[in-house]
Image (tube, rainbow, N blue to C red):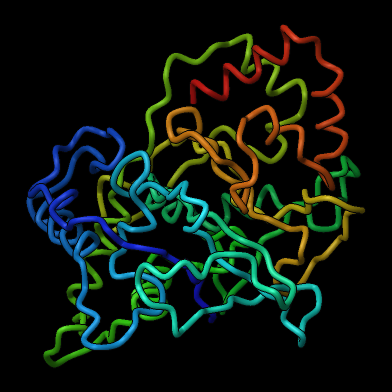
Length: 355
């Protein structure tokens, strides 16, 4: 499986900026979910330190950066990066013209601005995604996600969300839902983005399986954003326009080895499915990897606090622009939004800002 490659330009973040010892439990951005055992709290703190660690180049260039937190620090630990140079380059996969593959500038040196538009190839830029609450998303049973899937649009409502299956598991993470588990995401990131070796032994750039597992546990236990007081009039407008067709307000987690994630009602505002929502005529795809216009429904929890830029390429500065940019399956919903009065649009946007 190809990893998502984040191109980092200058990792000038001191590890101590986020390595503050045991994190306060309470659900604020960058902190742990409530109800951790002492063992889970220890693993969270250990993972936090490794996530923030600046790794040595050992005489060679990093693939992309020297630290996980370089891409995941805004507005706090575990977030994203708004820098126009903290994006992913994608180029067309010639073997699959409908898909995309990652492009890694392996000769990049830390601090070297190679993020300017390349003079060759077909590519897109990608914004690193925030990690808050993704352990809860991983704990949602596959059956809960699949019950909303309608790849052939059998109910003829124009919405044809589908699950991407990877080695028998549902893809849950990444803009294209191409990573099934947090463990897969973490191991791929350490190897492909920082260039670490994972395994036994010693070495400056060697990470043990125990170290990886502590980062995986930490990531799973990052608390989701807490919504402000919900404006019911705005929520009603959100539902009436049709946004909830894909941005499902509630999901329920199932069983988990981490008790803090088990059987929780969560409000991510995402169905976790792939939808064709980009520009151009929708292309109904029921098998294979995500096509050029398909994206996983982005969870909206915390979108008002986490702020922009929005969309996969970070090209949309405001929520109003982001809503207005939806096409494909969301075309009729976007048109309903456009027909709203200025006051009703404000109700909907204020609702989003309060999530």
